[in-house]
Length: 53
Image 1 (cartoon, rainbow, N blue to C red):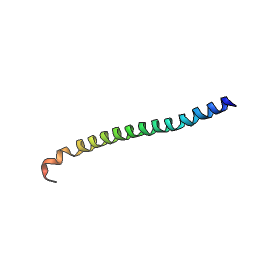
Image 2 (image 1 turned 30 degrees about the vertical axis):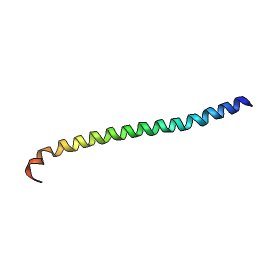
Image 3 (image 1 turned 180 degrees about the vertical axis):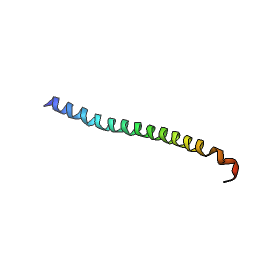
Image 4 (image 1 turned 45 degrees about the vertical axis):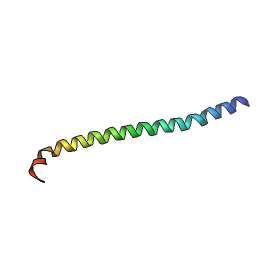
């Protein structure tokens, strides 16, 4: 009986930690993706900066 409580308790603690870890990794991946995307966008349009558009 005591083992089942411990097992449930450890699972109950593990799930939120894993969800937080997944959210953190997803956020970092999104930030890196946006940085790369913005760099590519700026590289594409840098020749037109001087023409006044």
